[in-house]
Amino acid sequence: MKGSGPGARSEKGVLTAVTSSHLAQHFCVGFSVLYPDMMSDLGLNYTQLGIMDGFTSVIAGFLQMLWSLLSRHASRGVLLGLGNIMMSIGISAMGLAKGFVQLIGGSVLRGSGQAAQHPIGTSIITEKFPSERTSRALSVHYGLGYVGNIISPIVLASIAIVLGWRQAAYILAIVPFIAGLSLLHYLRREESASKSIRDTERGNLWKDMKSVIHVRSAMLIIAGEAFAVGGTGMGVIITYAPLFLRRGLNVESLETSVVYSVAVIGGVVGTLVIGHLAHRFGNLRMAIPIMGAGPLLILFLTAYASFNVLLVVHLFIIGATSFSFSSLLQAHLASISTQRQRDILFGLYFTIAHGLSSMWTALTGFLIDTYDSFNPAWILRATLGFIALFLIILASLQQKTQTESAGQQPEPD
Image 1: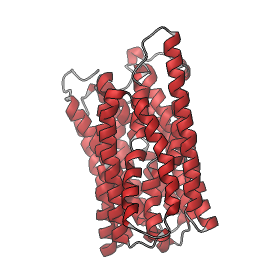
Image 2 (image 1 turned 90 degrees about the vertical axis):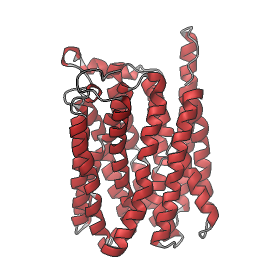
Image 3 (image 1 turned 180 degrees about the vertical axis):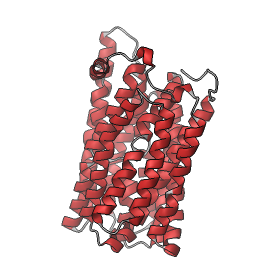
Image 4 (image 1 turned 135 degrees about the vertical axis):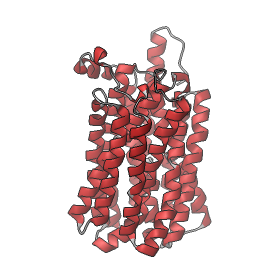
């Protein structure tokens, strides 16, 4: 654990700073409630929306590895602050867009800045906190970060109703800009937010990268996350729940924002509660049942032909499961890797999981357009979720076998 030198911040202070950045970025994720108005104004269809989100996710996903490698040479606090400022500029550019190409340009810039948050933020937290408290710290980091998703839909929808979606985008851009400046100031002397590898410990990057491949069960965890993000991940709520309510079930804009916020509250509550339980029972032991419930819950969305109160409860539970499993998998990876491996491992995790899985976003939009129904999209996502579950079960069995063959006591994960 780092952070005892001059100018060092407390564990709570570092967690608050990095979580505030996460909250600001998830406040910006609420931009999705502006999608229906944006699509109408610019004449976009679901396929174009899927292409925009998918292309952005591919670029931003692969950039997460770059951000992670940059942390070996530059302060992680500076990188995280600059990422927020880049995100602010990208959101402003989206508000200025007059066509599809300009919109993609702004979206890519926004995603490129956002790409710094997970590998850099997670690295800072896992270095600041001892391993026995990592899962709880990450659950707080993710759970409270998701509060941004609760607040932003109502705020942005209200602004859009009065001023229009473009003005809502400009106001939204202020949030990550302030967060970025705050991080640059607060973390400037914090050792856990400095370079991830000291100059005297630089070593061989290629050797460090090869060692990551041999971390037990890590590759299966990363593969499982790649399918889970495309299947039962929070994209179900963030990207498609507002569109499903507005255009699939003809729910009004403000009511959609309220239901969306209730679903995200489920994500916040679920992440905090499940993270607390994982501290006691183990990360993978909690992740497996959560990831098993997700595909079934999404498959049951095909039963709705119109809006009813049961759907609010249904989306709340989906939020509780879809938002929580990622922090469990990250805490598990932190527990089975060394410090030199960790930044590279997190870079691979976020790059592969969020980069390659982004093709599912484009395919989801294509299916909705082709069949004029959300049901094929829900079936696809449920299928991906079941594949993710299978891979995580294999990872758990692989770790158990390797631990037993080494003559060690089984770990709680």
